[in-house]
Length: 381
Ligand SMILES: C[S@@+](CC[C@H](N)C(=O)[O-])C[C@H]1O[C@@H](n2cnc3c(N)ncnc32)[C@H](O)[C@@H]1O
Image 1 (tube, rainbow, N blue to C red):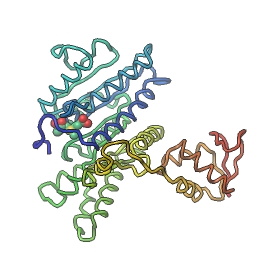
Image 2 (cartoon, helix red, strand yellow):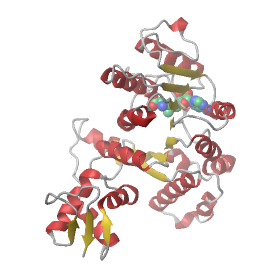
Image 3 (cartoon, protein in one colour):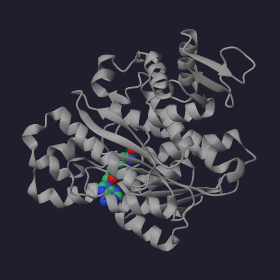
Image 4 (cartoon, rainbow, N blue to C red):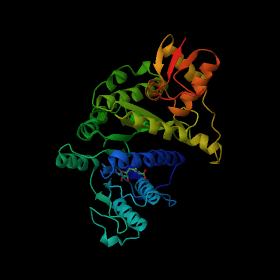
């Protein structure tokens, strides 16, 4: 794929949606990682396949998007100097140089003064490391040298294709840093080339298991929908095996409404999961965790009208889970984050109101009707 593309390529609507997810999540991540008890501790952002920093029409690429968010954050808290570290990895020399140019343009610095590490002249609390190498070699090099002491890290892993993101490195990354990942699973390519014997080794490496062969051996039993389900679930299971306690994904579809890729988010922190779900709901308010170029084009890229979710579904799920039991509201809301597609705050409250209206719950330990404070107790009939 990369061989076919020029140095810059056009931004597709689903790529803009991917950037929106990244932006929304990182707005919160930066604050959580550098305020309160984390004050003065560094937070690391890795863009493992950075790209050239811009698209053909001049739109920002992922490294520039995140740096702009960092600048915005610092404007909001002028006396706070968050220790932010950025690691940008790009193997292609032309794109790498373009990226450096875009970064120095952003900070009004002279291109020739940019080395690695580089600290923008106006922001000495930011340090940027540029690597014109491969993702695998760079991550292994960093982890070898940090001896497992990497600060909290968020890694955006956004390759072309699927040969450069082996399971082994995703697992090593988690073991060494207790990190979070946002990884692009290039479903269209992965599904298309599955039968090619010359790529078998890459599939083994990608999944970190030979279980994908189970499907290959019985291909006739698999409809396209079943294949999609199988490959999606297998990768999700493998990310959990790699040490990410919570894994969720978002589907990006092309102009034919076919799955182009899935973005998987993996974390071991329930609050991270909560915030990423919020970011995903901001891009798809229907709760299907999907964005489609086809749908976006149909609405001519105007504001897309989303269906609101049916909260009766969540009310039913809660009733099935807790029928005949008592549960602390806090605990119930954590269940909503980890075990349902719904969001913790707005959706839990609305579903509890529905249940209360139907007389299916009563609530202890609260002062106001129809409120569900953290320490209140929900009694399910
Ligand atoms: C999908 S693009 C990245 C787009 C970018 N993340 C964004 O959202 O703006 C993938 C980039 O990875 C680079 N690349 C390809 N193979 C690589 C490797 N093994 N290691 C690091 N970068 C690589 C390509 O040159 C390309 O610029």
